[in-house]
Image (cartoon, rainbow, N blue to C red; front, side, top):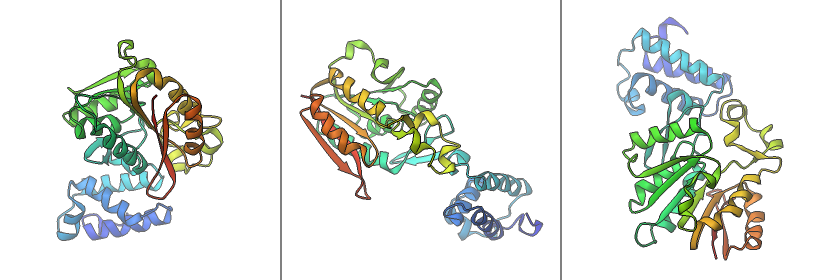
Amino acid sequence: MDNNVLRNIPGLIKWATAYLEQNQVIKPRLNAEQLLSHCTGRSRVDLYAYPEWPVTKEISEAFERVVMRRAGHEPLQYITGIKWFRYLELAVDPRVLIPRPETEMLVEKAIETIAKMPGHPLVADIGTGSGCIALSIAKECPAAVVHATDRHKAALEVAKANAERSGLSEIILFHAGDLLDAVPRDLLGKFQAIVSNPPYVSEPEFLSLPSEVREHEPRHSLVSGPSGTEIQLRLMEEAPGWLDEGGWLLIEGGEHQVVELAERAITLGYAHAEVIQDLNAVPRILKMQAA
């Protein structure tokens, strides 16, 4: 980096934007602004409102390091360690998948369903990862009793830390284990809702994912198996035994998966199956009601 931009906010943004663009990073200027905001502790608005703020050599060197990481297509959220999800600021790192907008819609539909339930509905988030689903439900449906599971203890560590930072650690119960096997057996048949964003990428599809995803995010949180629907089907088969009469299972899936899975749901004994599209009109969520 040219020493002339070392202590100059506009210069740093200009340099980083050009460098990231050269390395084919999408939205290079926005990335540059967010990285500088991260390094300075200043908001993006303040970076432009007060361009004369002095930048220390330490900050400029730290900024150069994170820009280099981003130019190597390391996800921005792993570099800053933060991902906003609905009303929560979550910590994320390579132990967990970075929450996507599609999962915000899954949570929205789950909350709409749970909010109508009387009393203290029992809810499970299966494969919690960062905890984004469980924490959002606990925050926005405070009457719910929320259980969260993950088979990877490293992911549970992230989820528990996020529960602590969000002030929700006292009202979510975490369990380590595979899908619903992690849940205490005395809760069989008692859940009003089970929600999950399971891995749903097929092994062939994984090879075509952007390098930013393929090389940095946890493979086990993305890939289900040869077809991509293996884990979804297992959950659909297990869930009826855990759901109360009329309880709901909501899962996220790929564009062509959820329509096929909706047809399969009826053969598995669900009373109702609804396909919900995302904001791009892509079939994304499958909502099923137990008989």
